[in-house]
Image 1 (cartoon, one colour):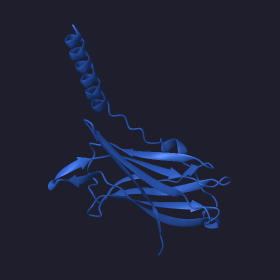
Image 2 (cartoon, rainbow, N blue to C red):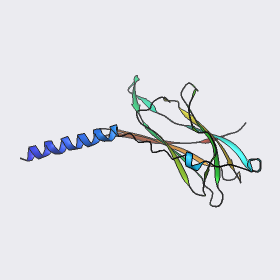
Image 3 (tube, rainbow, N blue to C red):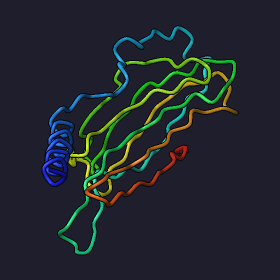
Image 4 (cartoon, helix red, strand yellow):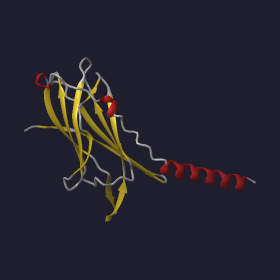
Length: 170
């Protein structure tokens, strides 16, 4: 009887994991609802930031990869002023712009965070993927913070690491 219960439990566990993989829902922030017009763009400090991300990494051998889910956090670190994200472009390992997540300016309230999620099975970016963000702020002492967390689990093995964006200077 105990063995039957164990087998049923394992089947239920495996079927719930399978359902999780099949139910791909984009959890990225709804940027459409955050669009804004910036009337005073010339009064704001504008900048660009580079964020490295990895849609997969290599393990054991050159031809074996480990796919990763990417969570990109765009953070307004000021307590008083909104920030504006003008563009968020996703580039693959070859430097090709493969996606534009933000094409029209969006705003973030003070201390707010928005996210971009790239699913584990979306490995179009490759091991050298990256983002370039264009942004505008009132005060250049508090530029936005861009971070990425890459994670994957397989069986009892889990892997996660993070990266942080750097400002691009001309």
